[in-house]
Image 1: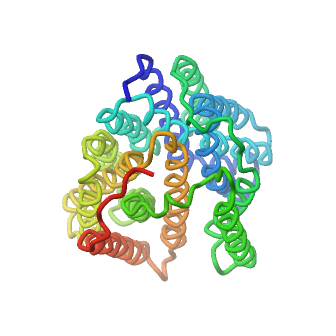
Image 2: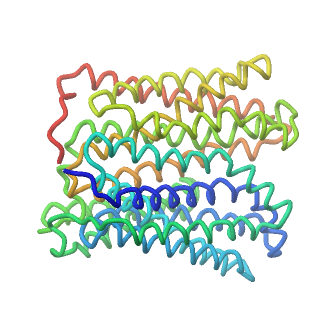
Amino acid sequence: MSAHPHRWWALTAVALGIFCIQLDSFALNLALPAIGRGLGTSSDDVQWVVSVYLLTVGALMLGAGGLADRVGRRLVLGVGLGLFGVASLVCAVAPALPVLVAGRALQGAGGALIMPAGLALLSTVFAPGRRERAIGAAIGLGGVATAIGPFVGGALTEALGWRAVFWLNVPVAAVAVLAALRAPESRAPRAGGDFDLPGLALGTAALAGLALFVDRGPVSATGVMAAASAVLLGVGFVRRERRAPAPLVELSLLRNGPFVALTGAGMVANAATVVFLFVVPWSLQRVWSLDVAAAGLAFLVPAVLMAVAGPVAGAVRAPRAVVTMAVCLVAAAIAVAALPLAGSLPLYLALSAAAGAALGVANALTLVATQALVRPERAGEGSGVTKTAITVAAGIGVVLSGPVADSTPAAPTADVAAVVLITTGAGCLVAAAVLVLWLRSGTRRAPAPV
């Protein structure tokens, strides 16, 4: 495959799209209290501003990948960028919470289209050997948004109000749409065939149930009903895909050992990253008694290391991806679990930097390396599966972080945070051990891209 001359427009569009998604995600958390005060609503109701976005993204991303392969990756990317920009405008001018929640749902739909379609587009318009670096560069720009998001959100909310967080996305999304219009189109050879609408409906409904279960937890009646629905609909989805003439997801993808191994490890890494991004800044303020500005400055080095992880992951060749992932998970496990044992702030920050670097590379590697393990005509499908999995894992990370936010004088933040961090480190170590055992088995030989 030769590189397309307009490929750099595609890279610009995808990078700006990822930047918008990450900036919006990480800038919004600090604005939630101000949103509640501004709209005169309770903290429980305001939580829907976050929940509805995660539910929409988790439910729609799988179908978005297959749709992009069939109707055109640039087209789906452009629609997603436009929808995200318009939804940001709706959020910025929302007069009441229901309108804001509706706008966030539209943002989630846009984000669900951007990521699978964008990654698939880069996989097909860049030549082999360059596509990994292109995807890594796009993810790296998203990492910049991850790094500056909390500080941008706090600064904008304090200086201009919470609506400024959403206004910021509008011009960036507009530039991304213009870049997408200049990018080359790419679709699978099978484009134009029958689209598996029953599979799409079953898969979307199953993922919506799973996302609702993760958001509401296993102890609530809503969570139990959502879990049961997700299982039943998931079984129906698999049965449908086995006999569909043009399945939304070809189940042979799940027999690609390296793809499954990297996606599973990426789920653990993503959940650990969510915990890390929440607990460490929280601990810098509550445990180490830093004010908001000082905590932001102290967390700058770990955040920057996470931001540069995309290009680093893009330089890892596919045959070394699983080994590199295992090494990153071991390093992250040691650093994260050792954080509660740090006896001084400099040591705490050094361990945070190591954890940020390791988790950043692991997360970026998940998206970069899995694209090399599927055929170009299935790039959207593959990225949709991977992004769906790690998005669900992000919800699990939010659940794991919850006890820290709910800590009380009877259960001090330091004690609760220590348990959460050690548990997270143990999870990374278990995932690394599974990868090592898989590498030592005879099943590690990668099949041809499927």
